[in-house]
Image 1 (cartoon, helix red, strand yellow):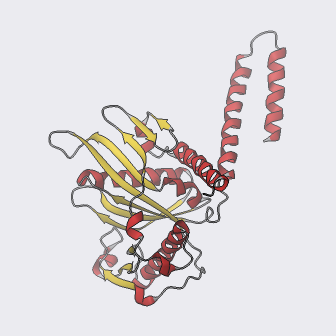
Image 2 (image 1 turned 45 degrees about the horizontal axis):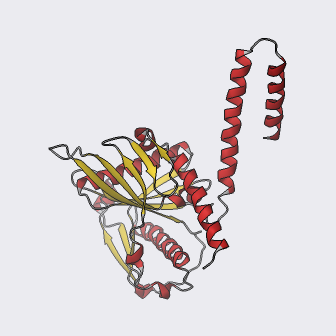
Length: 307
């Protein structure tokens, strides 16, 4: 970065010394300045990723909210947006569970993202996302508002030790309903685990055997419980009883407006983009970066005023 700065400084001096305007030199300078600016932004964002779990894989769950088939379709649109973003960032994505809606979209989808700072980047995406559009499922083509909830937690290391009372965990097995070949659809290999005291439910149907699905689901359950303990500032799992319902839906963090105008706007940071389709096609990095800056500001304010 220092060498780039030095080269740009020398290029500026050469252009100033030229008696005639050097169009190519000016173009090169503008392009190099843009690359330098982008590099500085990357360094700034990575400086924000210093929390304990930022390097971990991310477990993401998207739930359709009120709004019927439109919300189910919206939940799938959000999944597609994050999947396309993950591809650009070279993150490995694996769907662990999904429940498809009858007409279109999904009631929920859970997936795992693995790669550099996977959880760190996505942690600010947790919350409710709102879509306003002319419904493609309404015969009268009226405007509908749809909601979907995005939950993001860090995946714990496989050797992380947390005490769980097996009597508090209910396990149900069922046939897989997701794409996974004929095998998973013929046997009851999918596993759903419910932590009875908190009401937390996790499931996995991606693996071919019930044993491996349970192992993946158990890791997700432990990760959710630890994330919940940290969020609620609790020291023991037993202290989490009865509070799960309070955190089922977060505050609305972003609006995606397709009608009567086009705009994506984050309600926390104020960052906006009028090219909605580009955002839905995976260009969500600017919103993620703005969210990370917002989280840092919130933490700084909390540390400065603990009361």
